[in-house]
Amino acid sequence: MAHRPFFFLGAAIGHSRLLLLALSFALLGSGSVPAWSQNRIKDLATLQGARANQLVGYGIVVGLDGSGDQTTQTPFTVQSIVSMLGQLGVQLPPGTNLQLRNVAAVMVTTTLPAFARPGQMLDITVSSMGNARNLRGGALLMTPLRGADGQIYAVAQGNILLGGAGAAAGGSSVQINQLNSGRIPNGATVERTPSTPVGQGEFVNLELREADFTTANRLAEAINTRFGGGVAQALDARHVRVQAPVDPHQRVGFLASMENLPVTRADASPKVIINARTGSVVMNQLVTVLPCAVAHGSLSVTISSTPGVSQPGALSGGQTVVTESANIEVKADRGQLVQIPASPSLAEVVRALNAIGASPQDLLSILQAMRAAGALQAELEII
Image (spheres, one colour):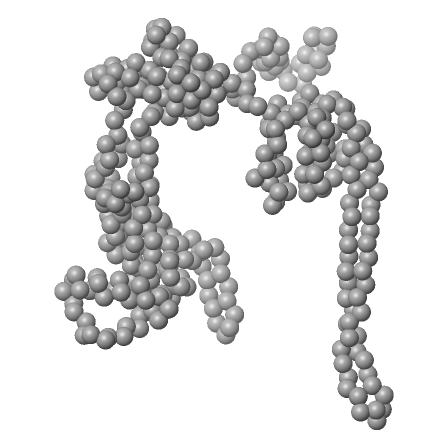
């Protein structure tokens, strides 16, 4: 039986491709590990302590074309301008009523990556916090960016880049994408960085992105196989402690070699993800279905309204009024009983569910009922 399919394929695909196909079938038949299950350590785990930090700041955007904040409704914008002008040596007379149209108050956000150094440039996002209609053409004035500890870690300034467009005239308007939020590439300069120790003493800790005892054990075994037994120890389902050189240069080389080691990831649990808002259903390849029978009917209610005119008789003194005639129709479709056979693979599960002929919204209820009956061998997660 193994030679018959190769005989027919050989005439079409040639001897070289036939050999590759035969080798592929041989590898699959020998129980080899699929390529998609092979991952590097850097894809499965992160180094403890090497993390990013969020920064935020309050700033002022100037140079808008009459699309800034309405200062009577956003008093904080006027207060910011008065405070900024005072710091620049401009003292406004008491009681001055500023009517600004080209200024907007914004929030500036960015992420400070791990191992950042002073002088490094960061991309920033600028978002309006008032009632400005459009930030196109605006320039962000110097804005300090603070971390969760209140310390200043970066300073932002620059011209805002928007990906949208809009226009309005005569009471009509059109808008493409978002006009109240934009980005400034390389708009912030790092001034200081938090300490990022790569491990404490002679040990570094690896944190798995997804907790799994099997994967943690395989990760430790891969490191011990490469660098010798006892170097790595799996502490729990998420943490793996690794003994590394103390010298910084040797430690960097050790980590560079370690993070590229291949590890076979453990199989995930069978799971079906359901988005009840959009009707999306996603399932992984381990989902299986036991034999069952499904009948699903739909109930639809249609309400239609037909306007009419009630015309009074001549010389009756009545008034012409508009009336409505409502028509309500209830339709219940018969649910056909469909037998679903045992489906050990994802392709067969999809084929069996498609045989029901249900809509995505109906499929949500069917999958929950199958899970309650024990026919769906997977975990349901509704998002």
